[in-house]
Length: 335
Image (cartoon, rainbow, N blue to C red; front, top):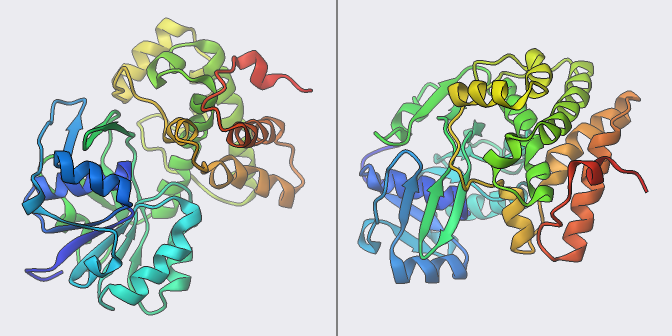
């Protein structure tokens, strides 16, 4: 990336607006591709990234480009892809038509297959996988609030893209094993669906042992599946994944003390899948639990809890009434 080029954000929803806002606050030239609803909100209020750690700054409109037209990428040196996984191929086609051929494309998406989709749709371009560990809540009036901790991780490259993207209040770290990092994030993201079904803030949900037991049982199913595939996930916390199911099943006071040392969570944080249900949007369950059930089908494994959660999320999507507010017992129940 050379002087004067922009950092494009392809799909400025919650994560894209927060990351783009933090980059702009750090002095980077930023161009956001967003939907009309988001554009209207930001035009009226400015772009306000905030964090549970205390960061709070409103970025005025003269400090970044904002458009629903993908030509906003015409001077991009880097394009950060932040759309939902199902929209990856369509966004790749827009990038192919509108971004310079030497622009670095970075996937900052949930799931494990998006970088492959981007590479297949963007032959000859440099595509890097990435992982965003934290949760962002859209609070309205242009405010996008980071509610959990962690640094962005992207695939290491000779151009030192990770280091170039880092700003004082948004760290981006390189890794030589992005596949392991992404699988590690997928395991943690299995709680997204539970949080969406529970209709509880993340901290309150994780403080309850029965919810953690559900999470632990999902992780156990997933670890068996990915072991069969020969995959070794990298934990984004100091806790190895082999210990995780047992630790999740600990009594509440013990787990609460452990969680406080490894991850910071805003009291009002909720999962992106909960937000999708509230706004009647398609969720990414097929790219999380659906990945585990797909492996189980190929390998002849049993993954009944993962299948049950996929079924419940799809039912909630069809009902279009937001989170169903289920209990752990209702999630475990079979018709």
